[in-house]
Amino acid sequence: MNVYKVSVLVIFQSFVFLFWGMDFSREDPVFLKINAAEVKNVVFQSIDYGKSWQDISNGLPRNLENTELFVNQNGLFYYSEKEMYHRNTNVMAPGWKKEYAIDKLGNVSVCKSGMYAVTYGGKISKFDSKTNTWSPIFTNFDRSTLRTIFETQNNTFLIGSDSGLFRSTDSGKTWKHVLEGWSIKMVEAQGVLVATSQKGIIRSTDDGQTWKTVISEGGVGIDVAIINGGFAAISYNTTSKTRRVRTSYDAGKTWQAIDAGLPPHDLVANVLQLDNYLFCGHPKGIYRSADKGKSWTLISPAIDDKVFNLYVSGKTIYALPRAGGC
Image 1 (tube, one colour):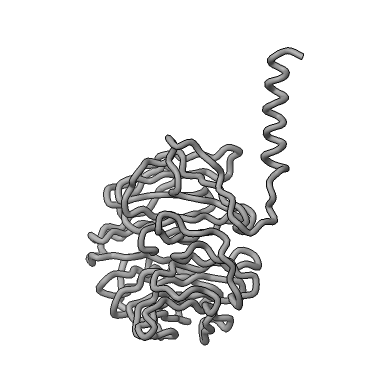
Image 2 (cartoon, helix red, strand yellow):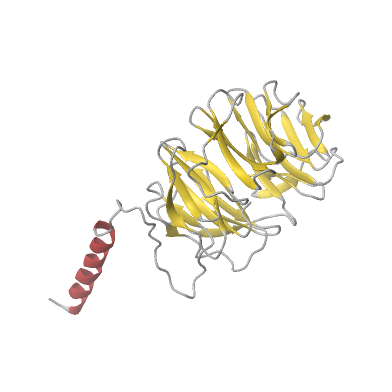
């Protein structure tokens, strides 16, 4: 056997050990080792419900500030105010590619009719997938301090700003002020809108025309998400000085606390669901529940004193460690 054949045999045996020698039944997370010179601890992914985690940071720049992450059918997007990077998860060997981004891109939302971005300075843009560029839109909207943009199933646009929530039913030609105070994150399921607000968690059943507060604990709303058969929400409780985690299975009318098994903390980031598991980004790490939040198991400890913000696309969970949570 010549040297070439020996080398091939050694490489093949190494791959066999890597893929068939891993114990995927263990509860402790498994992070793949990477070279010290590579970028690490920026973005992680799990394709086995959080049993193992892979660091997919290499290829991203170091030390970007105020970063965000979002996912859509085209893959994973990691961005800051001036830069955006795309990881196409639909190819055999995904890697990070720098994309065109406007200056001070702001908060990006994946809406029904495409990707939109709003900035604190009042700029609104839409992404053109054909030209791969961002272009101004809704230029008649004259408010600043913008936080988010959302498009309902009925093609109504909602823009959240520090001066209130605004609504348009004519593709942005006219806008109506429908709610005082800021609103940052919104989700919709079966015609019901649930959103975070300055007063807690709010709900609308008329396409965003009117809103009622459904969770009010003296503090603000932190996060909302769609789960199987209902919604999940995180809000701040001014009495306990902690963030509380709740779910609703009656279209957001009533809410039940599911955080008895989680360490109390004021920086719980978010909750999401993948199949039969709930996942929670917590200052202690990533927690998982197989019984709708009755009990929780720590499946990945925190790194560098940061809080994991979680995202899901298909069967993959992504984790973005951020200082101070969300």
